[in-house]
Image (cartoon, rainbow, N blue to C red; front, top):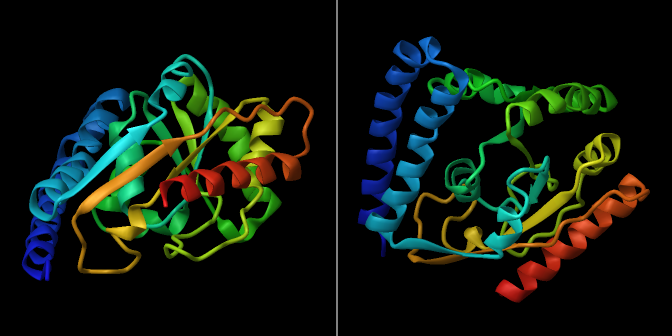
Length: 239
């Protein structure tokens, strides 16, 4: 069941990545950063459209007003991480450009890695510990100056639907150091687009936006605890 649709999606995804990759290599280096971002984000948006029309994966966004009232503010987004879907969604469907904090190994993926390299996002060596966090602290103001929100997946990796992971403290440290709020995001993408699963299922992914969490003198441990609390509560509401 859904094998044919998933095969069709995969073939179109790979074909479009190849075409997009050529575009990235040939054209994008000569464009300014804003145009690079807009063109690059056409590919994740295309993937979401293909998933919708070929497989039947749709989405419903709740709490968009919270994002809207922060369009002119520096913000850190913290989302649970279950699949590739939420990466595509956050990158291409929000009203504000974003900067992902990602492991530098992704830069070596043909086409995909080249594309994100040209967007001047923040890549880190995850084994560097405190030095990695210091890199983000140093680079984040530049991203805010570009009008971008920062995006963290505090679980650190994609997590299966009912699996629980300890939240990494990095986003909370950045929030306290730079005095910016965190907006939690929760979803159930893993129910239809599972981690490492070739076969995808039709359905409606629910995305819920939580309330802003301001540093206000809190410690990073307190902040990340509040982030986890909100995300887990929103996940329970979705379930």
